Image 1 (cartoon, helix red, strand yellow):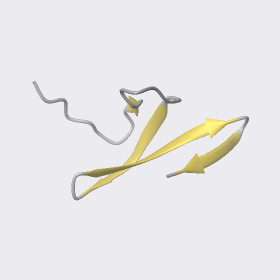
Image 2: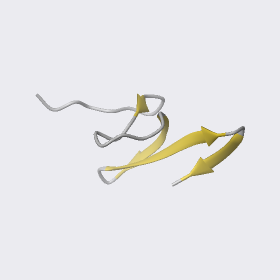
Image 3: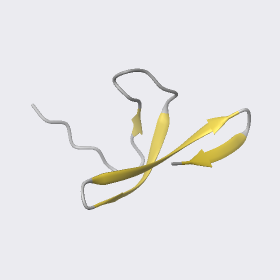
Length: 43
């Protein structure tokens, strides 16, 4: 069963990563944001 992610969901990579919040979805790509020592980063 395929999971549908939405803006606001908290996700992480299967291989391990910090928790990331989905901030946008476009063309099957998710833009996420995470926090590292109180400094927001985006990838």
